[in-house]
Length: 243
Image (cartoon, rainbow, N blue to C red; front, side, top):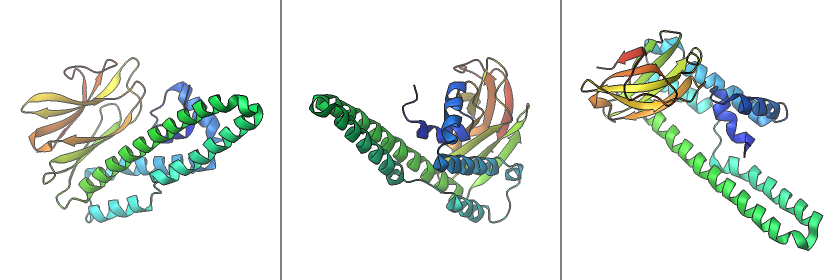
């Protein structure tokens, strides 16, 4: 069961939902104008980030990227929280009117559950906001460097990193999900030892990862692995040299 259909908009825009979630969210899109607009904007932004022009950084890259991000509508935690609180109050009032005094206990339980969902939404919104701020900081760094490579089976992996911050952003935009029964896994190579930087879910082929300690990494790679990933890469489809 999908607890909050609105929360799927980011994953849907990056094709990071399963078939059940995709079907449910597409039904929801037919009725929710705000989610349609947000999904369209997120997909447009992801497409621009994955564009092949990233392989050759143009002049004034930092200003151009920040200007683009400034024009993309961002929903702060308050914007997400307010309509959900209004929906919660309407639901409780309807329940109370239907069962009068006998429903007081059930109404309180529903209120507690819904408050927990609101808190979960706030935590998720803060985490997303912090993550976005970190990405912005890396892209805005005066010493930001970009490297990229085409994936063997289509798509692209791009790395933006700042030596001063010793942190990078890895953007994976594969052309399609990994072949049947397999998943994508991200790696860095440090002192000739591969280190996993995250395993994508089955069917997922777009991802953004923040990677710490980039000064010790010589390569950022992408491999195709069994579900759940591997201890060491077995089938590399891209390797971006960053030194």
